[in-house]
Length: 365
Image (cartoon, rainbow, N blue to C red):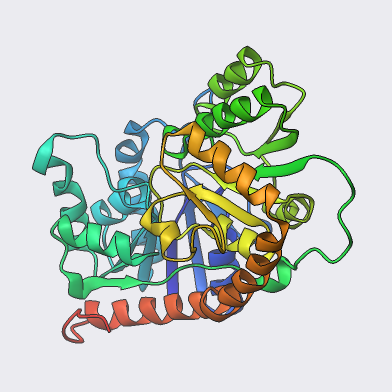
């Protein structure tokens, strides 16, 4: 296949997609609105960055003519465009081949009023042969937007358990170690974690927390940490290469994520694979994988006191953490293997080509 991939090169999953298609012998054209290179991949950068690292929304529409020229010159058999509000929109506007758009969980809302908010998603889904998403909840959301459920296929990207082994060496003494590697954007609500830690600190609870990632709200969260007097307890690591995540997870005792909405986050699967106990939002994306109080702890979104309670529960119950580590590792190996997910996605692209060429009904099984 000749595969056009429109994806943000700084996304942790983008290198896996690109290298997998290349290694399977497919010709690959990768277009990115982010300049970060992917070793071994010829990247066509078409975007721009603002001072805080966020991409201006108008840039996607402005770059449509350039992307259209690239695609029509290269003539792909199929285009995979990940994130409906950005690359998916560009893929739909430049369609010249089979199209698969991918929804990840934080990219459904358009900030419009009422039914208008669903219309762009419905239009993009209508242009695509297949709509991929990472969880059953997102599939339901896409159906509610008006996309034919027969077009939708659920494939979690998952993770590679061999890259995220459970910690073997005994843990060195010290306070509880927390890791949050969600980016700094409002949807991930990292301030709730900081406020929870402030409650714990007030009660004399010892901890060492590290945030790995960048984003638009990073500086505001830094200011909050300073205002709460937590500079010695909370560290910001900035942008961390995905290859460093196994080392960070080996260090951590707890994985924390306060995301108000999610898909099927690979960061959660990586933590589960490494045996790190999850303290995360009580949203369906997490409920599908975790049993609160047994294999993780689920907290109400936006309630710091809930995260404080969850963190204390996890640390005070080492036997629960130990049992959860084994259960979660086996679940990831059984249901979240990245290689199997990538093969399913490859088969999906082939089916999209067949549909584009008049192969029949789009209904997925």
